[in-house]
Length: 253
Length: 275
Ligand SMILES: Nc1ncnc2c1ncn2[C@@H]1O[C@H](COP(=O)(O)OP(=O)(O)OP(=O)(O)O)[C@@H](O)[C@H]1O
Ligand SMILES: [Mg+2]
Image (cartoon, rainbow over all chains, first blue to last red):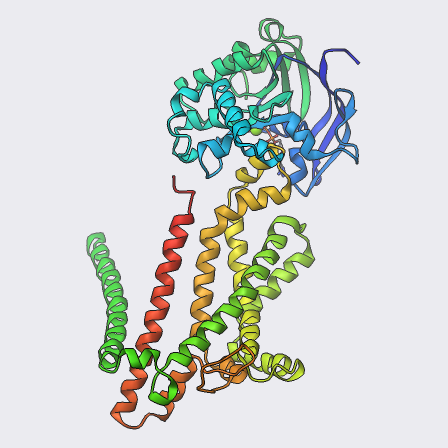
């Protein structure tokens, strides 16, 4: 295995009951890079992303074949602690989903779940995470207000802060800006620029401009298959596969 | 008929229905209050049965409400959590669900008969507050389970995913995110359950009896307000008797209203989904 690979996926099949949503996916995801997943709706981007922190375990009908290794360890092995995995592999969802509690309680939710009770420690985590998510200045005077009272863009940054508070190694983002207006989107994208210095980021996006702007590596999916993956500049300037070219030039999807 | 007249007619019908419903309610409650007010007094509410008071009945009622809630609420909530959050949605689980739903629709006298056979006779608890509390707990269990299930199902899946995605365990997720969000719905179910317990007569009559004394323990028999009212109305001959019955009814209505208001207030306080 290559030194700087975070995830190594081999021959991954995923079934929802009878329906095969992922077909023999093989890919490596490099550490400290931003990897973008693009492809038409229903091609399996979210499904694949959710295999990386075993979020698909929540769905009864899901069956998986193949292998996903994180730092060389198979994450689907029997003795793997799923909560531990999810602490290492954080996730930000498409629709901002702050909990119905205060901003502060939202941010320290993960650390508290891990058993941290020391108020000073929690305060520190809250402040540093909110700063890292570029939200501190906007909310520092209303940490006890409900997280639901924030705007959509602020809610999404709160969710990012909440994820950062776990000090994960990887952050998975499923169309994190699709529910946001252009200005809020810009803020979140700028935030990702900062975050990629410290974290490995995997992002699903419908916007090819976004993929081109923020990612180092791009993977193109179609009908449950990984068609092409490579350096973002290469994918967008001279794709090797016809389907990729058709997609990025807007001929379908 | 033109669309406009149709529209007008429909509107009139809707208005009439609303006014009719509200009107009937106001008339019933107003009539009871007016009839009962004259007899309401401190001595009537807090006096013993010998002096014509209803304090023992109020106490018996409260006891029975307390016991049956203390059992049916925690057990019902836990059962609902199992059914919605843990159980794989198999045929067996849908069968359990069907069974609880059917139980919720069974006439209360059947639960009374069951309570009489099981708690009063087989368990040897005799006709007592405890027997009635157990009986009504079982009667309310399916209602609490169903309502809690509905409340849990209405909690957005994104809350669960968010919490699990942060490395919280399933128990932590349920305890810290799912249950608090479902609480207003669960509370509404509890309010309705209280109303049902307070309003029940037949199964209570069978299991708690008609003794008019102030209960000294849960092993004593006791007469609830509703049973008292039932017997009063049945035996009423003079206008004076009716007045006493209406006064009792007034107290009953006030108790139910107060419980409702408190629960509503608490539920609004707890509802954090409203930012
Ligand atoms: N819980 C589920 N049960 C059954 N089928 C599902 C489930 N979730 C997704 N699918 C199917 O799996 C396929 C891939 O879905 P997925 O959500 O991963 O696509 P996507 O690429 O993320 O699409 P989008 O861009 O619209 O978000 C689709 O055909 C979808 O209908
Ligand atoms: Mg998706």
